[in-house]
Amino acid sequence: PSPPEAPDSPWLHWVNEDVAYIIKGDERSRYLALKTEQEREQFIGQFWERRDPTPGTAANETKEEHYRRIANANQKYRAASGTPGWRTDRGRIYISFGPPDELESHPVVGSTPAYDAWRYRMIPGVGKDVIMEFVDSSGAGDYRMSLDPNGKKK
Image (cartoon, rainbow, N blue to C red):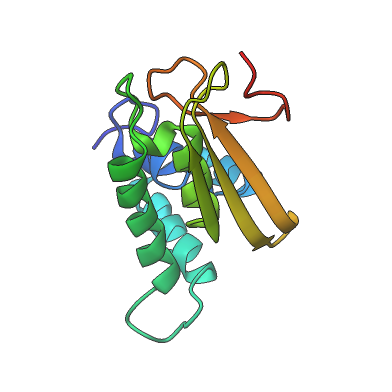
C-alpha cells in the first residue's frame, strides 16, 4: 500500500482531485492527518454519508452527481492546452455548482475575445442571479474566469 504522501497514492488522488472542490478545509486537514488505510476508507465513507440526501437507500445521489459532473467537465471543458476539464475554471465551477441555469456563448467580435456567460439563479451561500464570465483572451480555447468586468477587452 502507498503511503498517503506518495504522489501516485489513491488516497491523495481522492482528496486532491476527486473531492478537491467540495471538501471543507477542516475535513481536508483531518483526512491528511489519518495514518491507516482503514481510517481513510472510514473517513471517505462518512464524508459521502454526510452528504447523502436520502440516507438509508442504496444510492447516494450526491456522490453519483459529483462524479457525473467530473466526467462531464472532463468531456466538455478540456482546455486547448491539454489541461483536463476538471482543472479548468469552467470545470471547477461546473463541478462545484452544477450546470448553469443559462449559458450564453459569445464569439470573437473585433477586439473582444470569445467568452461564455453563465447565469445561476441561486447558489446557496453565494447569492441570487450570479453571473460568471469565462474569457478566451488568448484565442486558443483556454477559457479563464474573468473577475474583472472589463476582462473581455484586449
